[in-house]
Image 1 (cartoon, helix red, strand yellow):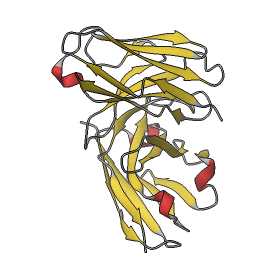
Image 2 (cartoon, rainbow over the protein chains, first blue to last red):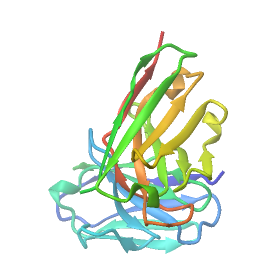
Image 3 (cartoon, each protein chain N blue to C red):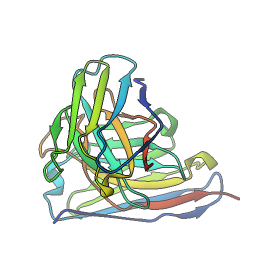
Amino acid sequence: DIQMTQSPSTLSASVGDRVTITCRASESISSWLAWYQQKPGKAPKLLIYRASNLESGVPSRFSGSGSGTEFTLTISSLQPDDFAAYYCQQYSSPYTFGQGTKLEIK
Amino acid sequence: EVQLVESGGGLVQPGGSLRLSCAAFGFTFRSYWMTWVRQAPGKGLEWVASINQDGSRIYYVDSVKGRFTISRDNAETSLYLQMNSLRADDTALYYCARELGAHSGYGQPFDYWGQGTLVTVSS
């Protein structure tokens, strides 16, 4: 099975910061990667699919890049609403999530 | 508006059974792959099972194969998960989710999620 490793596990940042979360796949998944945001007590929300495509309604401060085995999620200027957990997911074969990154207020 | 509403969770003893349901509203249910994803308390997300539009293709994570059965009723616009031989490590919030794109093939991200139903396996 394809393993997904996210880093860091926890990220402390301030409003206005630019932050990057990394996700590595144990083998190539082409661009079959999605990013989700999850707030406490809520279901995950799809942010990005196919590595860099922004889901409808998601603010443009979110962006994704990468292909093969290394991917990044970048938030260009953190807003108060962005403090949450973030998960990557490969959907090449079959589905695996990363362990998550908790983005907390510094 | 797309809505997914799970039900059927609860407390069950190890070795017991439970059937989860997910009622779908606001979209053409029969056109979409559907999925169950679970999240153990304080932990990350784990894909459990997926089913295609007409129920002819089904996939499971290895840890539930032979114990869980995913199914759907397109007339009732509902998704189900029959869970047998439950173990303590099946304790989790179970989400129903829709795969992105009508009439798509297998392997898409999940664009709509329900709020989940909690399954607790304990004696």
